[in-house]
Length: 153
Image (cartoon, rainbow, N blue to C red):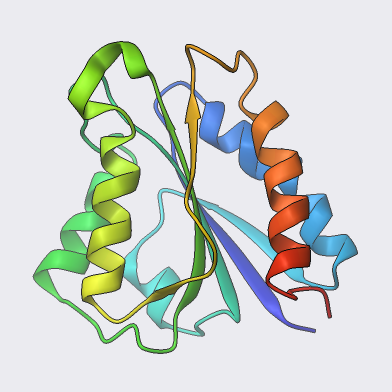
């Protein structure tokens, strides 16, 4: 059974809620799913999964949530080759903050690509100003993503 890890970086719990809401969709598609809060680099590089979904919120200043900062620091200080990484990314933010909207998701996407990771499909950016419950946007996106990328086993 293929493995999917969902890496969560959250400020107020919204990204974790999204991860928990989309997990069953991947289980139905044939994946063994793990939701990882406060991930470490080893969670990614040791026993690399077949697929990774990042669910990452952004602080008001565009930074990574505190629980995700150690993971990003490890990626930058011990940059692994991520040539085998296939991933999707759901970025949560608030457009009222202007230029920093979904800043952590965009920065993570760029970092992963620089390390050789391959994003499948487009990044989903969820705006708290437009979508009260982030999973209302995430669930249909994940359903479409699984289908469009042929991820069901």
